[in-house]
Each structure stands twice: as C-alpha cells, then as structure tokens.
Length: 236
Image 1 (cartoon, rainbow, N blue to C red):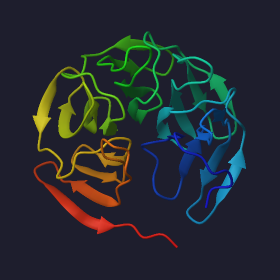
Image 2 (image 1 turned 45 degrees about the horizontal axis):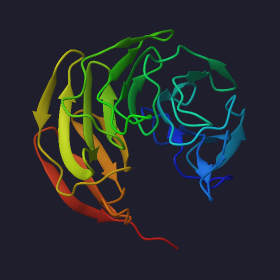
Image 3 (image 1 turned 60 degrees about the vertical axis):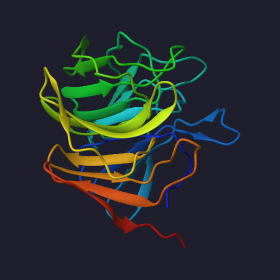
C-alpha cells in the first residue's frame, strides 16, 4: 500500500511495472491537497521529495527518474508543469491552457496533455511538451475530461472519459502527432479510470460510470480489438 492514501493523484504513465511514480492527490473532505511523492520498486513504496505545492486531479507522464506533472487544482486551476529527476522537482514550462482532470502520456521531452476541465467544464485542447515548453497540438475531436491515455507523443491513444453535456463514453482515438483517428471503442464506457501501456498494447483499469459508481472491470486494447471484462479486481 501507499504510505499516503489519496485520490486524484498523478503518475508517470510510461514507467515500467517495477519503477512507478505517484504524486499529488487529495484526501477527504476533498480540499486537503497532497504534495507527497512516492516511488515503487516492485515490492514497496518509499516517500521522496514533495511536489512544490499540493495539487489534486493532476496528470502526468514519463518515467520514475524523468517524469512531468500536468496541471491540477490547488486554490485555482493550474497551467504549471513540474519535472522530477528521481530525487527532486523543478518547475517546467507552463501550458497555455490551465486544467485539471487531463490525460497525459509520453516521455519527459516528448509528452502530451489532453483534455480536462477548468472554469470551462470541458476542454478539447491538446498540448505537446519538448522538455522545456508547451505548444498546441491538434485538438481532440470532442472536448473531454477524465479521459485516459497511453503511448508516446507521435503514437498515442486517448480513451474513455466524460463528454458534454455529462456522458461517459468508451470512445478510443489514435494520435500520430498531427491527426486524430478512430479506434475500436471500449466495451464499457467509463471516466476517471487508470490507463497504461502503448498504442497497440494498452490497459484500462477501473474508473466510474456517469453516476460515480466505481467499476472493477479491466479492458485490454490490442490495436485491432478490445476485449471487455477480462479481469475483476478483488480487495482484501
């Protein structure tokens, strides 16, 4: 288990199973933002240097020793990104669009931030990171918050999430660094799930339906087909 329980945390989405990273988040009553950073070595979590500020509904990408945090919410919606080198956080470039509940994937010098929300309830904006600054990429076909992503900047997939006016979807889209294209949809639409993997070998884990009820189902994406309900989580 993590040393600090939380939800709405960020993660290094391209990190391998034995070298993961979790940062930020929030605990009930929903306003107690956390700045804790923890590393996973394949068997246990250890606390590391804190984020410069507590942030909830944060996103991220990269590896355990080369990660980037994306946006989030502190006392306002954030456009900031922070870079982690395995021991400490430093300020990175600011996005042009502040946001929380975004999706991220890629590496520290070639990352993506997609969708989310700020005072506008849904964002279609996509931004690309080069390790120091953000530039606008091609916007999502439909503004989406609470989506998930996998892959790299020039070969990514974006899947699930919540779209206007308040619909949970299982839509899957591919991104080649310039254009969006349709991929096979998920078996079960959901929001706020955890995504991982590559554009042709991805996982979607848990999440919630439109009423907020938690899901236990896991789906895997092979690039051509999507198999629903292959696994169910149990807790003890």
